[in-house]
Length: 161
Image: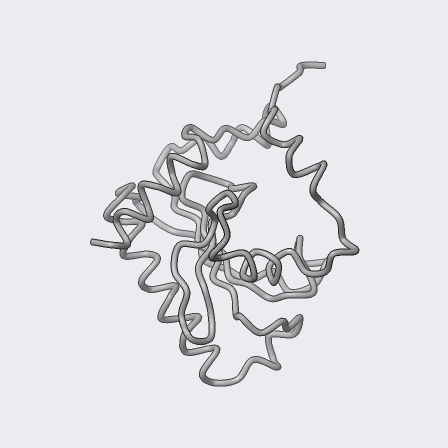
């Protein structure tokens, strides 16, 4: 068996505590703290956050501020802003990474692959022709080519511009 070293995971393992409530609500409540940056943009009804366990560099999530586990219960203002922030995220990611495509989607329920079932969110995953996303299938390895902090600062700077 091959070993991959991912020392940054230990901080998540040590901090991860489901008894503290929803991780997406917790991230939003810490937006002004001095903790590790994650949130890129906050709107009136939704916000954009980096995925800490990305499929590729620049993997973002657009999340309604209101804690809601059922997409059908989102109101029209929330749905509109989720889509507007998704569009804005695509624009920013194009300027930073020049991806050749995007996967955009929502996993509703555990059976659909939702990692955080209790709070709906939309994924935006930049993609490139010939990218290395075959690695999980062939080698059970995921390759992320840039540190999350570096990616965050690049995207945050582009968002300001």
